[in-house]
Image (cartoon, rainbow, N blue to C red; front, side, top):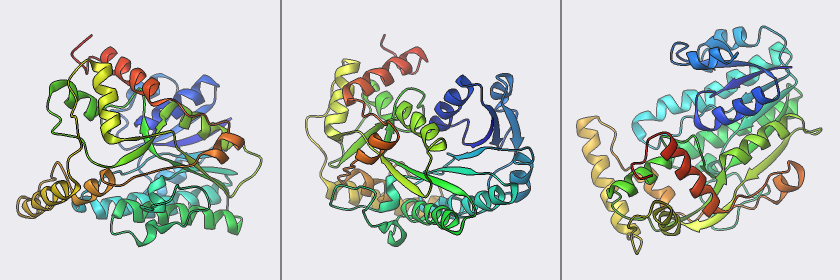
Length: 328
């Protein structure tokens, strides 16, 4: 068996890669910098230099017979200064990948989208919820919705058999850039406060299992929302603080304050050209209450929900093992 994987050096992609290698699957990984990914090559991964915006690189990666393409790479920026780049990666890159897979005769495409493709809705999200991200003012939501629509349209045309996965907030071992920053700042006493929203927190390890289950699913044209335990961001931060044995905020910051502060930083960034620490888009995510129903994924992919306390404990243990947290 041979598969192609995008995002192999990333957080979720790394976990998908681990599961594929554990099953002795031959993996071709599309990487922007092969030298930076030399550790993957040492583990038997076939490296192909390039990116999904480059059709020639995709053709090269799929030159050998390939059973499945796992599209895990993503641009998660919430800054307007990265919108053009994000659109090229999410929209144009996904279109290129679907076309290249069709040309190479690949049977299955497992496309990792996000619950953000559904936009910010008051109701609990499931597979029947309207995909409102296309109308969103947030480029990340908009491009995620457009990209997964392109994939499902390719499936409907018979170009390729596709399955779309929509993870919620992803936590777990292996994270050094996303939610891990909250753990580190909290331990250092530098987290200014908790945002007023709430989220659904998914275990990266369970998502990786779902990726392989989606590959082997007898049906196609399906979509699965991958959530977890629901908690406010204040509850999440207090759970992390308990695991780290450090002080946590006692209340959430007002949404109006965060929105106003983000607008000020955004205005300054237009002068300096630098990316601000907080953007109106990121504040919108953390003031929103995300709830996800994963019943379908649990029933058809064997997906499981990890308790938030366990997820936080395992993430802390991994960060300590990597020397990214000071306390032992």
